[in-house]
Amino acid sequence: MSIKVIRPGLLTTFQDLGRYGYQKYGVIVSGAMDIISYKLANMLVGNQEDDAALEATLIGPELKIERDMLLAITGANLSPKINGEAVPLWKPLFVKKNSILTFGACKQGCRCYISFSGGLIAEEVLGSRSTYLRAEFGGYRGRALKKDDILFTNGTSRNAASIFQDLRKKEKAGYAEASWHIRGGFFQKRNQQILRVIKGQHFSMFDEKAKKDLFEKTFKIDSHSDRMGYRLSGPQLQTSVSKELLSEAVTHGTIQVPRDGRPIILLSDRQTTGGYPRIAHVASADVPLLGQLKPGESISFQEITLMEAERLLIERENWLDEVKIGIQLKLESY
Image 1 (cartoon, rainbow, N blue to C red):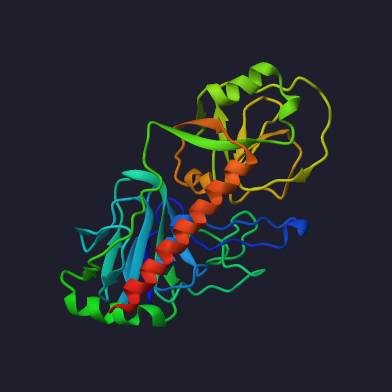
Image 2 (cartoon, rainbow, N blue to C red):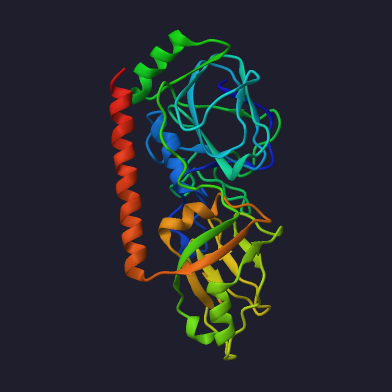
């Protein structure tokens, strides 16, 4: 045994980079909602970027760690504790056998990622270990975690073997933390989250008021939102023409507008095609921010060009590469 689920939390699932190549058959992509926090969690424990990790939403799980283990927690701050002692995010943590990992109040963000050195063991389904909840496959038995589930991990990764042994010697009260961390605050909590978007294919179909409202008004994430999409309340965005549209491919961050005029931002568990007008697309560089927004929070949109969106994505990936190199150097220094 490696990990026993004492309490599952609100929604805790296995996730990875997603299930690509099967949308033509109607199979959704899934994968981590905040792909940057997910990747960083794996990097911190010496894993491959696409190893399976846990994604916990708003209320984290309670887990019994049944063997000595190296793990990392990134993303939302859900007040993690080991044996009742608060522990930090964004750094490697050695956890002693039979210690209890718990979570408390959500202080920042929405989804946290828990990675275990060596990665969680799960059967690949169509090339991915991500959980596809609606179809009930992938991840852990195709569902969210439940009380008394037993999770297994591979052995400590070779890249993290030295830091595992070093922290093991320093363990007190059931855990030990690295003396260094990475800066994970690329999603700072604000009263109003501004998302950068590019105009969608059907932007011209909307009336002038809708076009103006999209960029000048504030929207709120509705409580009827999930991993499939965020429904937004606020100004109703109406089209100036009435015609049927053919269903076409959609992507993570596509903003569709149904007939009621209330926009929907499509997310990781989005459908493969959509027939509603697509007024805009969230820039890829800002897509991870979506995964850290909660129902009830306000957002607004800022228009940028396709060229600006490409530049922002390149900057983000360059930053991620630099962090990856820095982590590797740290792990090799032990």
